[in-house]
Image 1: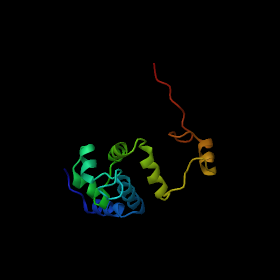
Image 2: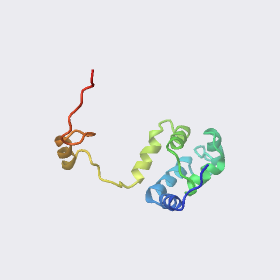
Image 3: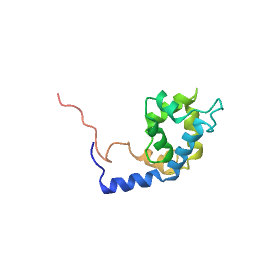
Image 4: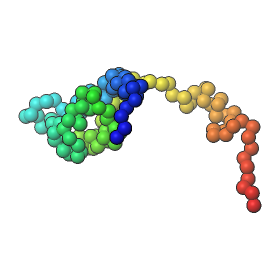
Length: 131
């Protein structure tokens, strides 16, 4: 495994402190339920980790923001905790602020799409294969 370069380390640390990362940690903690061992809806970190074939510190580090949560791990957690795994994703979308405005269905996008086909340079012709 290669070591991180200094700028990669700083960009990773900045990502883990972002608002969206905080929303992800909040969703992961809420999905397991309130930490009451008598509650029927509570799932411990150890039980969740065993179910998705991870170690308990992996789940703890994701909830603390010391480790990124991979998309596939997020899907596994959703499968483990909910009948409908989209419920976990919907909660994350609800708590996460929009970072960019959508580029499709805007006036600029329609003008851009109408003037040229994507993937081609303006003025270039399609070439036919030589026989």
